[in-house]
Length: 180
Image (cartoon, rainbow, N blue to C red; front, side, top):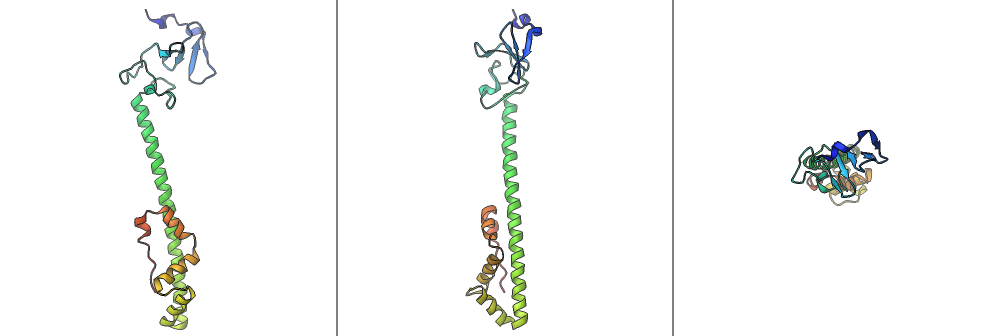
């Protein structure tokens, strides 16, 4: 004899908990499309998705971390949804870091352009050799590429930290300043 025949749907009342109706006469709870007996902790009806071996189970026997308000989602579907969420989060994080890296590289090149402009101005004013010497003297470096790095650091002090923080090492190791 099927227990569902004796259930009075007229006496079903909406529970204060979202997701099920309580039947006052039988004490069963209607969760989506299945009846659940909280006394024995089991469903009275089969899982309509017939997912896995236990058709009386709920959300792959993981009700603490998963939910199925309609009663019509299979465990495989829930796993695929979870994987999809993880992939979306990973791609979002990667996109964020790529954006921050590109912004740091733009700052680096803007600061480098300012330094090159300053160096060119010194060279026009004092001649090439003396202009380079004054540029290296101003930034306290023994050779021109480290003077350029010090100039860039002075123009945009946060840029090196941002590049190392947000860019993969293959990117920031290739960033070398133009030598005068």
